[in-house]
Amino acid sequence: MNLSVSDLLIHNIGLLATPLSQDRAQWAERVEKIPQAAILIHDGRIAVVGAEAEVLAQSPAQVERFDAQGALATPGLVDCHTHPIFVGNRAAEFHLRNAGKTYLEMAAAGGGIQATARKVREATTERLIEESLPRFHRSLTCGVTTLEAKSGYGLDWEGERKSLRAIREIETHIPQRVHSTFLIHALPAEYRERRGDFCAEVVERMIPSVAAEGLAEAVDVFCENGAFTVEESRRFLRAAQERGLSCMVHANQFGHSGGALLAAEVGAGSAHHLEYLNEEEMLALAAARTTGVALPASVFFLGDLPYPPVRRMIALGMRVAVATDMNPGSAMTESLPFCMTAAAIYCQMTPEELLWATTFNAAEVVNAEDEVGSLEAGKRGDVALWKLPDLESLSYHFGELRAAAVFIGGKPVWRDPDASSRY
Ligand code: NIG
Ligand code: FE
Image 1 (spheres, rainbow, N blue to C red):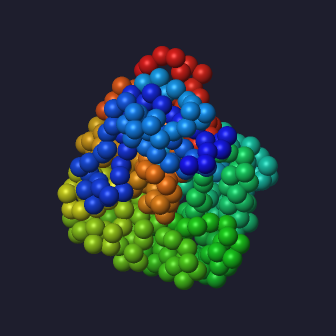
Image 2 (image 1 turned 90 degrees about the vertical axis):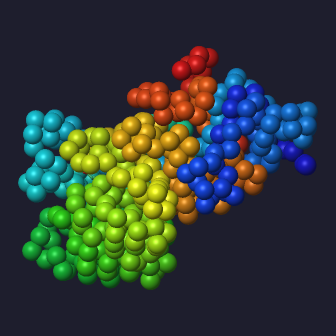
Image 3 (image 1 turned 90 degrees about the horizontal axis):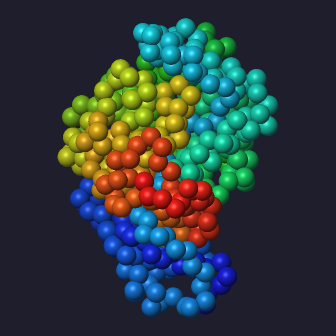
């Protein structure tokens, strides 16, 4: 092997834990665990991974080394559902909710998504980028190397395009890979009496422009009472598919909205939220091979919703991913490890399932499973190191867990200044 200066050997890994592509069908049962491991990265991709002695035997003496000091190594995490492009905050609403007002009541009174949208529409692109960028950095410190980022607080075309362009600009400032999604989130206030006109605008102008200008890879729709109906959502998703964009749905968050069945009907890659999900809906999603994305931070933060029935989803053959849903209204966090803890407690997910759900399965949601989501030869050298003794501890130590070090394409991109001690 012809090694270059950019190659890297991560050695002295106490335990390496990763999904393997060959175990995809049995994802809920198996994680590869290798004690005292190493990873050799060549030209940004994993060249050799396995027991340290074997990897060292295949590594040239002059390669740059990184001593993991006994850390746990996992694939860089993949956060497959975030809304990080906004300005301002909704802390006051959070406390009003805690005092008894509901999320849907405040949304109906012009708060919620509409409140954030008013601020986003007033903001310059520069301001929008300046406020959004730190969220990507915090996500990185939590071990996330690939993330999905949605627009959805611009509402009209000008605001949505500004948001999608902000994502493109932010991508040039950060080491993570970003998969952008055009989210049709709520009816803009000025269209209240002209719903049909807005839907026509989405189908005839917005989705074609998103595709033509390469502004997003996917289209998402909030299919819910108070947002968009099943019929409207179907039109949007079909239009997206006609333009070669992949599809996802915000489905069944506040009730059996029809969103989950629609996701199955159109063959969407993923259906997200799924707080209200019955057997028929689970079977439809399983048959359509639509991944269910659980967003436990939003259930935790809203406080009055059921958690998605993940154990039953898995039993009925669904693939499951877990994501943060980072947004100002229902999930003000960048911490995917926190979401693992919540999914462990409230969805009874095992440490092994949680690893798949935040790496390989999440990579599939953004169609990046050939590139990222597991530590296997040929994949990108995206690695998270954790000052933890075992995989179980990744969802056990909650609230402030940061990665000890993060590598993207074999390059060190984050190092915890406090890396000397163990959690
Ligand atoms: O995924 N449910 C719709 N969208 C977001 C919340 C958006 C907001 O409240 O600003 C979610 O939870
Ligand atoms: Fe969301």
